[in-house]
Length: 234
Image 1: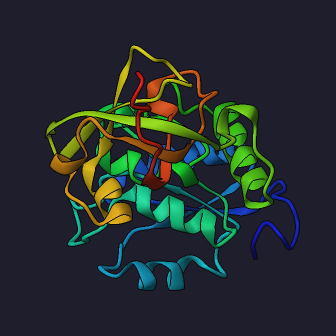
Image 2: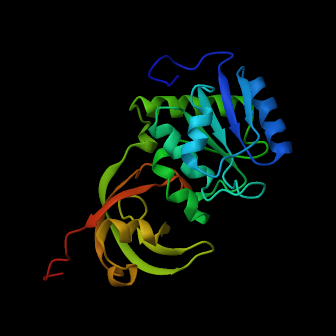
Image 3: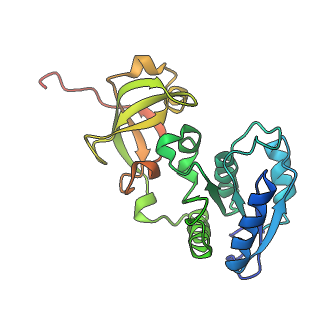
């Protein structure tokens, strides 16, 4: 079943993708309190395709932890699972201890298809889980809140540096906050433009950005292209 068949309803099965048993159990309690049925996935396949083959048909939605490699040999992060699940019209929510995507480039990479993050703990109560699933359902249908709508804007690459996980570009989005630099995985930009990030420092690019996001951690970036040059008279 996917969200295009019918909306989520009470008792619907929710897959819990988590490699630690204690977190599967506590997340299961939250799912039950939200009036859904938990379906714990205790063995996480090494292949993402195999994971979807296991959960599709069993679950009407997905809740996934971000770091899945602690107790299993997987090469993907939960953010990728959630993004690709939403792309398949299977509503998904990321529940993690690493919820600030401004500090985590592996989440920022997939943020455009992750409507809402939940921090593990007090943030992951039944009401917020239900709200997150509702937002994921809406986006699967193409309905976006103002904070999630993309706009084509100018993005200036101010600098680059090594982050905790990969090289990040320090980008300024004037249409969002002109004095704030936001970290963006450099590879997202490089893959779009076939250029190294070092070559793009100081350049103005264009990208789809949700400029009404209230915080830097909620921003997403996609579809980078070379932007207009600076007029000679400036």
